[in-house]
Image 1: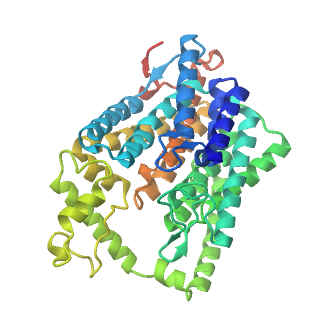
Image 2: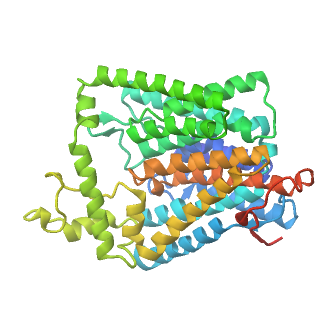
Length: 461
């Protein structure tokens, strides 16, 4: 096929243009992954060689070469989050080895969704110099947002999926659910949201001053990305985007600024209420928004997931095996409710629709506890950074907390934490933000920043 050849040639071109250096290669990967992940894969179905895996392998090699040459800024430090996640990743690999068998989907989910994001995080935190990203990052990510928004808008208007993955479906529940260049509509919505937030708050965390033209491009691109996140029609993402736009401003703004934001929020709330009233007679509103059966089904689904965890509490049922186990053990056409009681007559779905419940049911108590602990440690690191006396570090901490909530609020209503493409972007942006703590070690800032327990990671070099 011609498509993989073109995709892999473009991958080689990126290596040549960036000369294999970690920071420009990392930025090139962020800006092109949604597009080239579709083109650069082999075999075309059930791919083993993919663009993301090749780029991450290249980044690992580049990072190791620069680390061996002692060109990694500030030396290599390993924080509590990385250690905890690494132990969790070991549990994932053990589960795949013992129960994954030859199931390609299970291995793909485990490696791409949980193991490789750790490498991305470490490289972003330790090997990428945010000062070198500069203006190029604004242009590159702005170009990505234009691409995502255009593809999503065309899909919404034409009802055609132009970048089709095996197992993907543009229609769900009788409606067009935009997925853009991703397999899942959840990934499209949340990746767009994370990129929009990153661009919106970039001037607060960047040491580079943008030109007036670039400021306008950044503002337009961030608004475009946030708008694109609403196209797949996820109510949780709408609410999350609105809250995440306000959180950092409320956190660090002046009293006048906070008052302005409250007034603006009230105006936006009034507009949303008016729009809700207008849409209240449509079938979408009545079936998707106002129908209480959706809530009852979700509650029944959560109850079912918890029962599965209770029945397999130590080791879980195995990664990606939830649906098979549900259908095999609990579903019975003659007596459907013999295991799972209904909620107001609504039966549970055969997937958990909640990242935490999915992890606990599939991997058990120990791995689930490690998973929760790792994300809580990441949140604590963000909060401690937000208390720094260095402005860029403080703002980076506030943005880290913000994107943490942007990732997790929808994750409690969807099993979005399993999606590799979303995890790649979340771990990459989180690592970049934590990399701002390198400022603590710059001579010009010595003595100006209060040390925190998590800032003194394990020093390896």
